[in-house]
Length: 233
Image (cartoon, rainbow, N blue to C red; front, side, top):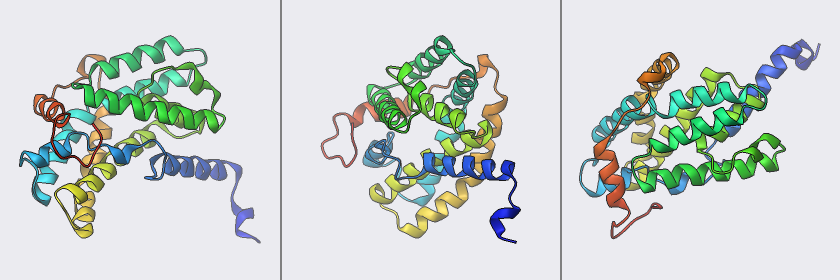
């Protein structure tokens, strides 16, 4: 019997959803993530990040204090909102709340530009509900794609976290600079932190969402006037 015949429909749909998630977190997704360093370029310029160990500390701090309490829990709420038909008021409310937590113009512009790029892509891929949000965050459109394509919320949150981390490590390889092997070591070291971040974010209550990182905000603002830059401001 052919191997394909052994797969029941539920398994096929699960596999399709998993592949859709891979599509969303692929570095080839045309949203321009490669153009941004998320404050890392400025951190390198000021000497805060200069080798693999300082990269590990930097990424761990951002995972534990920013993504865990901002992007991931807001993704969870956006995912739930997209699960309901005609729930645009709640989707817009969550989007505005997420954008209000961006602490510099650079970080806000990065979020909006990537969100707008993913919105265009989803419209081209016949996800018509993407047209209903005019100035989305990246997490807004990412949550819509997960909802439309049957990706589980927890898996989607893990994918969002991994996509961010992979892009940061890619930037670190260019900026620190790191070798490719050190980049892979970093990813391996940070995998447990990804799982912990998602578990924590899924359990957060409304009044626990939101963290301020003044150092990141200042470095991001300084990046706007940095003399020599590889990454977009």
